[in-house]
Image (cartoon, rainbow, N blue to C red; front, side, top):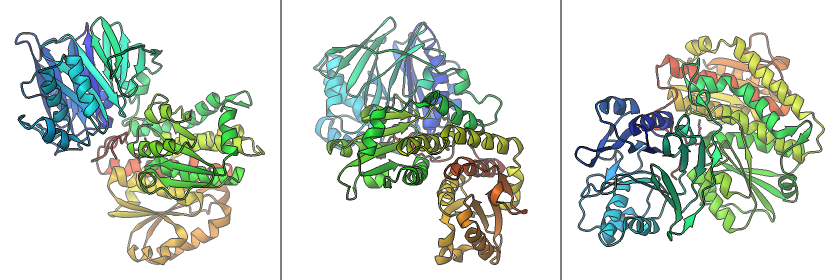
Length: 593
Ligand code: F6R
């Protein structure tokens, strides 16, 4: 969940690293740090503190030129948010300096077994790695000291390591946490995310687990943990500055909300050649030969999975179960005879899902990962992968990735069905409906009048209920208003006790079957003083409804009804002056369980 960037080459490393860290800050923003070589004293200086990358930029203004360095933004796992626990960490004599993304589960055991005589300055698991390398380097050469250490670690790591005795090298290694090597005219950049490489590298290689590299300014070598040499597989980087900047928008979240129509269209372009689907027939055949689909995911992606279940069951009649990844990983339900697994994940790095993947693979079941990051761990380790083509999602609150997940799941459902709808046309209509809503929305005004309390409810039935769950997550995660998504009919079975004067209740209505029922539930809460807001599709709208959307195919309504709810969350956070793109306690890409 942390961001790491290292650079070695012919430029000032500070510039590359600080730019990279700013772009990766969405991965963790409790603290930031940097290490640069000080040629005067022949040591690596370490600058670090709690707080954001901007603070680090200010504190390193005076530092001198260094062509080598490593940096880090942290999302705290072991130890409080403070300077001591910030990265980089160093070994006792300060010979080795390291940054780390991941969690070392056996760090206490390693400390007890190998490091009884070492003194520690932080509470982190990371410091143990630096101390182990130093201890082993007393009898082994550095590369072997590093691989010996790596072999002892249980958990996950993406690591960059500097050696003060040899300041012309960066060592890098990875297991379970992502690490990408970029090369370009300026030199070698190594980071936990492609975005940090944009502008400095033209090509990248995504490091495999249990491999490590030794990078010099003019040469880079790849090894496995037995020190056997391996080949790189570089590919061109296709991102550019427009993918990593806010453009005309004040926040990435707003930019990403507005990108949603083009994301739907981009998916159509990438998944069809004229009318022929580009999804591998093998995937469809394998799903069709299964007797049950299990969709596993977390958070917003799990909400997309719930929509996917409805779409697949309604279009293809294959039964689908949706499970929360962190629950499935350790409490596997009874499986059917021939299950097929679909992992839905924006980042492709979610640790809860990886725990599921390891179990499923052990049982030899087929797995399809639907992800925005084709180089991610979960894409690479699954039997098949489908890409979301949403472009980098930088706001921590997911919006366009959700819409992309629902779109790709609709294509999968379509491919599994007897194909009696024109899916391309229906998705294009949905893209236009989103566009029309965004062109004329007045959500901010509604938010000002409605969200005056510390709590809020979204209600709906069927697909609208699932969108309500996502709407509630979005609102709570960025505005900190306690919000629940509720099946409209379930409210009266207990939770209606919480409704009092001016409690906000937002209803989503896009299904003719339940229009009347949900409106009756609205009357029940209005009678108890609730302030209500109604989002409906034009075919079902009553004259006083607050947000009226152009109708779309009944199975695709989540693509459009979710959009006003994303803006409700956005404006609620804006009204409260919260940091919309980086909400408290959160980080993009949850790589710890
Ligand atoms: C909320 C959000 C999270 C993620 C969840 C899973 O806005 O983004 O709930 O959906 O952490 O992440 P991925 O999709 O990367 O597996």
